[in-house]
Image (tube, rainbow, N blue to C red; front, side, top):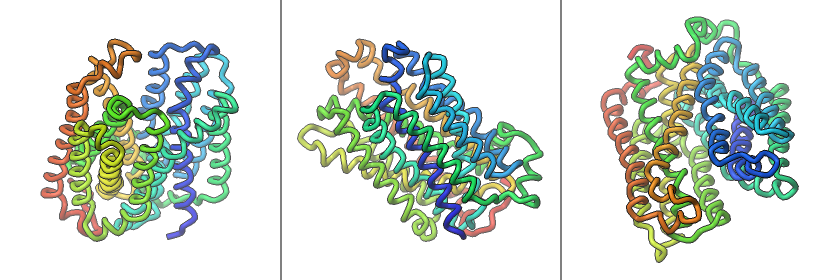
Length: 420
């Protein structure tokens, strides 16, 4: 297995997530400034437009990569990401901001194509290790992205977007010269791609019981994680008095642990224990961490938060690449792009559902406005929010237990049946 193509894929995903991370702390201030005058609801729609486009186009790009090859789809998507960020950076109207985010969201569906590329160049035994490299790129991107956005904003609120656009364009050049194509003329994906579009693949995937369970577990886990990330900073500010600076270090700590496990350990763990068991252990750890968050007190403070953050990071690092590996192993070589694209659509939907649930759960705290937030955020709101997330992840744990019992033996070897 050549190292250079995987390195290019790692860099591609890392830059994607750096760009996504750059947007998080900067876009609200950029859009609400005097130049654009966006309302809070319009800012919310800006963020949502990205996820909606990812939801729609992830399976489409994945299936197109089956038909036309991974390399051209990745190249076009990187150029689209670059264009989206540059439109943001040079925008003069609110409409241009929406156009930039929509283009970036469409292009952001290339994660599934990157995963399909890894599936092409790895064996079934090494599949989880390869998927773990994408998870590591996710973790590191979330560590560096917000920090880069904050630092560059000192030279101008639009500078981070221009930097991200230039970074994506440089990545496209690297990919053009360094990434070989894996979908050759006789590749099974070209034949399979003629059977339907990406959304057809999603519907077909859900009819496969094995793959349907994997996608449902994946969806529940990301919904729970999205609820936590949407409210965790508020909890830290309310309960411990942390500001954005302290919160940034906590999230960086979590991201580093996650990247270390997914980038360096997941392959060995899968070979020793198998993906189904790692999914179960990851779900147990994450459920437990969500359950105990409301019990953190100022007296326990930083040590408790870092411990919970570490448990959360380990749980996610064990389960996410294992589920991607299981999805990949559940279908043949000709369906990798479409199925992994469907997985990313499921993830995008979950990232939209999670924050909406969080908003409903902490409604009593939010309806008075931000000025009174911390006085109105009651212990009951905290319990309802994190325990609901824990219950959702616990449901995923139960499904993972059933999946391991019903289908676990089929993933013990390298040969996986194409049928359910």
